Image (cartoon, rainbow, N blue to C red):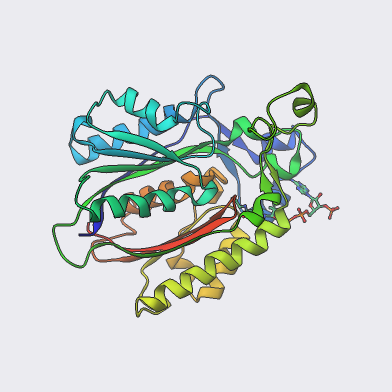
Length: 328
Ligand code: UT7
């Protein structure tokens, strides 16, 4: 029994932070940001709202699109590294907001790969024939963890949420086909947020040393991201007897347009088969792939029977690729 995607949705805050705005905040330029990353603007959530707000909006849209009530949902899997608070999970807050008592819910923290980790988990629950309607959402409020005095990082990230509804396929040949997922904790030193965790509880020192902000060694992460996404894409299609030209759409994690271009070349896909929306939202970590999926379905760039590959790379390191054949 395969899980198929029966609805997609996304929510991004209205407030835009453009490259021109950033020029007034740090020593940067629209030209540098555009040429080095492809980003033109990103969305910023209100200070007093958390990730669960955007995830709830996304879940409500999924229910509306599918025409079902919240009580029909069996499970909510929320991929995020920026939950509203450490305890309880953001997934629990979404369950409360949806006012459903028939489901269980949990968070997945796998950095920018969180959504594809969650999607694979959801497909396993569907295959086990227990849960029948699963919401998988990727959501991040990265603006809460970015130092807006650090030009290396503040130009990259934005806030947003995207999600899918996964259900058992009624027809053969559609749904989540296969995946390759990997983790290598050696990557922790290159991409992390150390302050406030159990090894380094919040203190005057962690605050003054700015350890509650995201840290990234961009150049190292860039190289691993290119390798991780292209290797898993190529192995995944090969083990399914496919060639690059058989893939109708490739949706990579949106961290940097240069990474996306290099990966596209390595895997042998023309630009028209590679989905890019980084110019509008920047890097929204676990949310980039489901936001892109939602936009791709809305724009009819994915049709019934299309073979689609999702590839991600993020903190951990975590990375991988997922192959599905669209059921609608
Ligand atoms: O989503 C999780 C995974 N994350 C990623 O995949 C991100 C991977 N890394 C990247 O996308 C890129 O490494 C960055 C976009 C983060 C940085 O691009 P880069 O080409 O690697 O630039 P760099 O860090 O080597 O910096 C080049 C120069 C430096 O100046 P010097 O030392 O050559 O004088 C930086 O100080 O650009 C400077 N620079 C900037 N200049 C203007 C760095 N940030 C900026 C900025 N505006 N915002």
